[in-house]
Length: 129
Image (cartoon, rainbow, N blue to C red; front, side, top):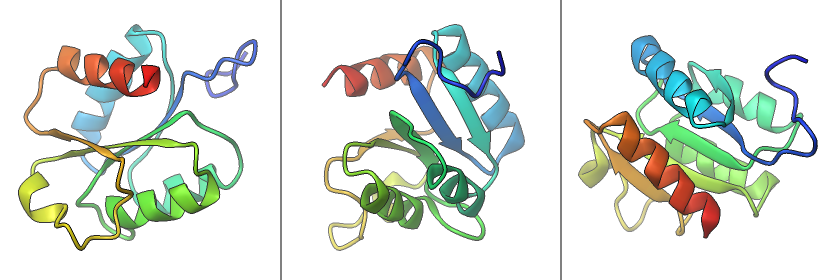
């Protein structure tokens, strides 16, 4: 069965948008090792197109990306699926998520640099909420 298809109704599906290829590769590996089904893209526009096609449990997105930034992606994703959980990963958290930004209010933020174990722990907490 292809990796990007849910197995037995599994809702541990993560859509990852991260423009740094090395970072994206590390994140995918860590999340897959933790038992998640991960579909990844290098920009927000491609990720948004995939979100329109199928459901995911979590959107994990960098904030600063070309074409469509993570905040715009998250805003549009929340319009498509209000139940979608959203987590931002960024090196610019203090600047990027100002109170007047359009980011979904219940989105979580994980600031770079972080350990992959921290990422997995945060994802587990968010999905358990």
